[in-house]
Image (cartoon, rainbow, N blue to C red):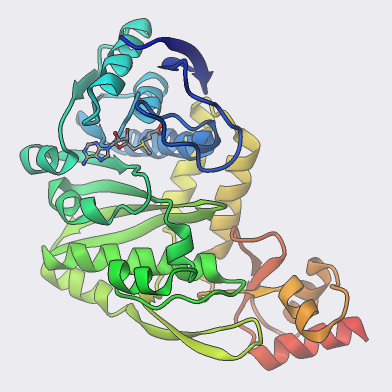
Length: 367
Ligand SMILES: C[S@@+](CC[C@H](N)C(=O)[O-])C[C@H]1O[C@@H](n2cnc3c(N)ncnc32)[C@H](O)[C@@H]1O
């Protein structure tokens, strides 16, 4: 066994290779074997809360898969921190990573965890699960079509994407090739990218007559996360497809440009968000404040239109210093428009006000 060191995240201790460099920020380095990135702790916090929310609404044993587990950080935390009837399966094709994961299972005396050491797509062919978490290096595309078939009806599928530069318009050809969609580099590029990713995954589900409803979707500096509730049915899938199309988004010059095809429906399910918030109170989080803020911002976004305006983008365009975002939001509200903050950026807001009204409000506040 490789040399290991013990670390703690949330309420769980687990082993990682001693050779790993642990950075608090950024995407984390792909080492020779065994991967663990401390900067993803918040994303694992949310996975624990999501599984707890599922357990709170279920009355039978759930099968939870951490499909690309490496040394098992995510699955071990779920197994150790969530309460209820469930079994966690950790899988990685890297034997050395799974060997370390087994040592952590023993260390925590966990009886509800099993390991597999297979190509994830092979495992997804053989077994079915109620919750599948797929956290790859880069894009989840290689696993989507198998995952949508392996998830049990009513189950939850979660994906990470770290190919954000591709999804956000830096690598146009790669985005077209991988997601069959046009992105755009603009202030709302993270929402555009997230919606391209969601649209792609829903279409993959629809091919197999599975309806994938986005229930929680968010973007962080260098990764995106999407959770789907999965139901069976061609008609349900058809209905979802009606919300995927090409649309227009504003570029930095405030000119409309075509983007997509992408998902134009809701990014979250309000009731689900509320149950995740309740579940988050029951479990130990490594970053309670940030998780709380993220979930609250997501809640605010529900019912609001796609995309948003950004105070800094407006001030560069008009060459004026930015007014306080709260003043801008209040003014639009006074004019009768709906306005909310967004989790994508602290300097941005969503509104149903048309562009000319937003520009007028900005001018009124900066003359
Ligand atoms: C980003 S790491 C996973 C990190 C982990 N989920 C966490 O939270 O720390 C991706 C892992 O996927 C594994 N992997 C890549 N392709 C795979 C495949 N086709 N089947 C199984 N494992 C695979 C790699 O060995 C690597 O450990």
